[in-house]
Image (tube, rainbow, N blue to C red):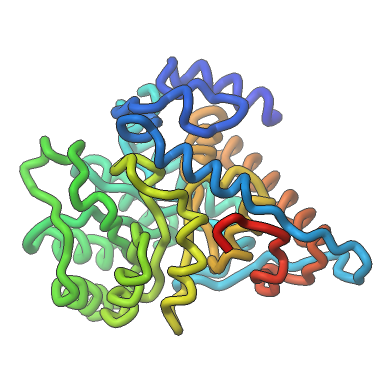
Length: 343
């Protein structure tokens, strides 16, 4: 299998839900939820891709960094590169229905592990959460279940299940606090006060779990997350799927990263290549999460397809590090950036 074959098969299997466009920028699928699009006008999805395209990097080729390192440690995981598969769910209604929820979760978790990284798994329905959790358990805890910001004690019940499954970390995608697609659920979601967040983080730690907060788009929320004891946060607008009024994540990443002192800051939104990974690292991220391209690779080629795409991504990252004159991903920083309109 090659990338062209993978994409063709994904296009067929997704049955129009995703067109597998040459440039995955949210234009063709704007407003298509359920589906792979951004909410309403799709503006926030498009903003993610556009923001990264505006970041230009410096090229340095007079150096000796011919074999740069890409490995990193994050939340108890030793990763081949600073990349996680973003939490995704709804294979039946968001991805064309070719795979069951159980099979999609297995592909994402096992494929990520085989490529040397880890996958986050999704929530939204009991089936989605349980299938993702089961896949992580089968992988020996190699994955991060990301839970919706459910109200009341239900979130803690999810954490109990994650601990029992042998997970190392658990997350919450707080950016879905007003997600209308969850309105059909019998359990409401809600934003969290600083006190509620601290109780959740303490609950994770008491269960032996590290805690990842996904969906931070302001320095104010980042400082609250750090004060509450979170182990990492993700700058994310949920792939443009919750609010069309948001900027691209790359635009807010530097300010968020500067606002905390000890907290690893991750980012997602519009990452499509190894160069995009380096751009996010240069803007202040410790690692990135990637969603739609991993979904396309998973549907198009199952575990083999996901590994193929992730290995290509790592080759692109190595190439980008060489061209930027960096001996290791940990050396990335603002000095690598030639221009970005908001800096």
